[in-house]
Length: 415
Ligand code: SF4
Image 1 (tube, rainbow, N blue to C red):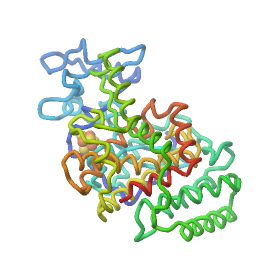
Image 2: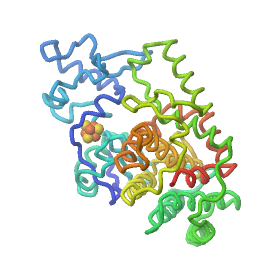
Image 3: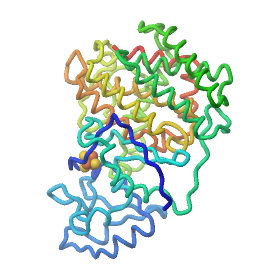
């Protein structure tokens, strides 16, 4: 593989702490080579693995099998991976080796991010990513095909055309907006949405060079001056309805054992979706282990976020921006503006799920742990859910943006 420069978010730490959440939550699809490799490892019932069920072929796609409780067939009773224990880390499937790291080609470099669905990543627990360059270079060989040159940069608005350095000017200004000190994360997201809307309105999606930096600098300064911390008008009723359907998309967990329920499972999901659309009574049973709560209890104010929760959310959004994990190939092919609008929508979704946890436990404030858990739930899907990749999901983002409901939702759930 050609050698790539690797960039990591300096604000993010991560090490695996062996909680096994990923061994229970992920569906691991295998390439032909991985199937052959695992079959050649000669697993037997004496090792705790039944070779007849360790690989599952579903409509031509082969994945690792699951135990009756949904855990990976290779997870042993002590919470260790049997493949790793017997053959070493490099013998595991690529998806297991990479998780929760993401490596995306950006021109002639690779940018690294993390999936906050790993609780250690959400908690910023472990070694700085910047101190793990040797391991990251080894993993880079797994994601960059032989002979790879570079992908074109995504579009800013509709039509692609900028080269990577000019595309990254927009990314850099988004990161600067989110890095502003002593400002609440919701306000920083609203400012970024504000200046991106100005880019769209003025047709500045093809600006380049030093002139682009000057224009984006002025637009972001204007956004900071024009947008006060005051929440402004509330979201529209239609915005709230569309938002609840988005929460449904991010909160649902469809395990393979549930999908086997066929028509009954689908009917239950449809009922839950209709309940979210109605938005009255009790929230449907969407998340295992999360007790029921009333919609009205979730919609009341829980006060401002703690400084710790605000810092966690700021780190989450900055890592997604720095690793370009919100648009292009890393996010359903979305242009930068639409991808950032989708990313900003995660703020009210996370706050809604955090409120749900607090309301279910009859608390009047959201804890830092509520926010970390909600971020983990949401980032399980971000960029990986086929449901959120569809045409309807993208249209929903555009409808919310057109009414300024994304910014209004960020403000409404900030306190
Ligand atoms: S979820 Fe994270 S900490 Fe837990 S086993 Fe997986 S990679 Fe390790």
